Length: 492
Ligand code: AMP
Ligand code: MG
Image 1: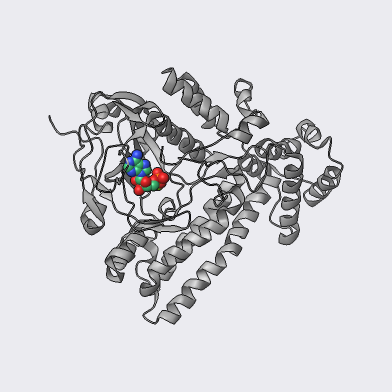
Image 2: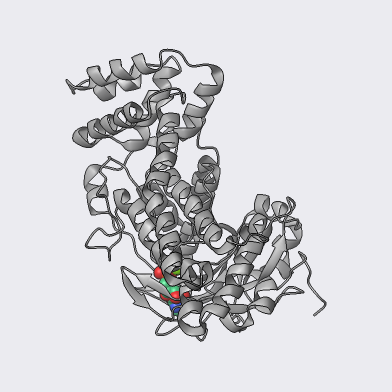
């Protein structure tokens, strides 16, 4: 077959960090069928969407035709899973094809998920079912539209294989685009198996990709830790702002880039409660909505441990410097959270920070007590500020404490100019990827081969801030008994 070159692929990871990955080929897919292509993302990557939609594109996305320049590798990584250390996880069903420089000059990874067994598969089958692949596509696009850093799906194709889960399901390959696939767990793997000199190499690669401005600095490894901490402080605050629960914040699922990765067991809050958990295996609530910042800090401490020998040759000084970064995390995250909450409440940044925090907390308490829908309640604040007070009046109708809160809120910010109102709108989406609607769309796609509900939901979620009558049904929370029994699953 002639060469297929939809983008200019490099293989910097495979070449620079060959010790931390294994060259590997994707499994052949017996009968590939296109499912969905992300045309907008294809353009962003400088690829021709029509070419990717053609027969060679399909063969490529199925793993049957390697694009020119691809040097597929399974990446090694370790990870703390629910607090316990697994020294060898790695890409058990994924492969990195290489990197491409996008239209804005950013280097992005192109990777497969579901492309067959690798040396890291352990007992897994190396496969991905169609439903979870579409879920990652949908929720990733929803997060992107909300302005939250995330990996994104370029394509989903059905392989023609069946995947054995609780029942036989159609298999799929998801093509994932990421700023990189470097994880905290990558550092843990290299530190444990290869030692400090190798961590140096990995850290230099991470700096070149994510923090090139640090490259010449003597304290660059401490600065890298600081930069990762800053990105995670912000990322988790952004998650909290839209009610997102990642669900499995193991260190192998936390990126160095600050992008959200791995949408397996994620879910969105409906009625507000900080202890909300949906993941079937998270019986202790380790990764509950309200614990995500402290888990991010815990994960960063694991990253810091791998960097200690690089930070200072004197171990005491290294520990002191790294500890300062880790201990500063809660305050840093709190500052990001305040920024998110001020935007959600429509407050300018002139107010007293403690008073604004309390105002936000008190609103959340009202929501928790009344079991109100997180997304719609905040949106009601925006609508009130925008001259439509009805939804807020309805929300607060039965709560005697609510009027006092509303008075405080209005007194804090009596006027809003157009810019502040626009910020408030962008912080309070009208639409999020509600769990029951995601499930309905996936069920139609998988069980009835009907992608119309998926497409309709995707189109809606790509414009989450503007009200449209046709999409109003997507704003409806699930019945409480549905949310109460809703469960999500890892590694599906
Ligand atoms: P995840 O829960 O998707 O973040 O995956 C955790 C680990 O399990 C990673 O090392 C994955 O590569 C591996 N894994 C998950 N599902 C499979 C599968 N079906 N086959 C092989 N490895 C898997
Ligand atoms: Mg993972």
